[in-house]
Image (cartoon, rainbow, N blue to C red; front, side):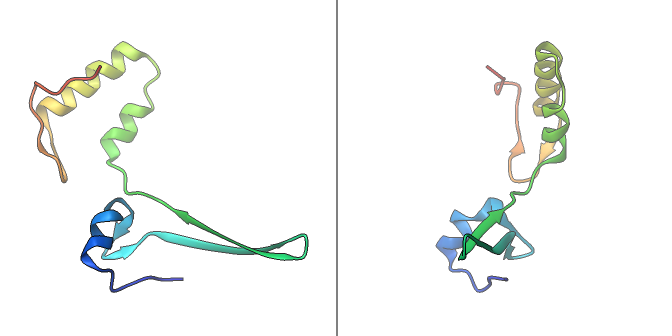
Length: 88
């Protein structure tokens, strides 16, 4: 199922779930106990560098990599984040 022609407020609300001007959405239809069940699943776009940081196990290492990233890289949709933005 594909959705298109979203209104401006829908684009704003669902921005993390839109790619190439279309929502990233799946509809799964199945039968459970003689009833039709419809479920929707969505995925959000992810910044690859954030995913890499999420995979780091050690907290101190994760914080260091995060601080280096936000101090040196321009991230899509975020502009340049300065050194005043730090992890908690």
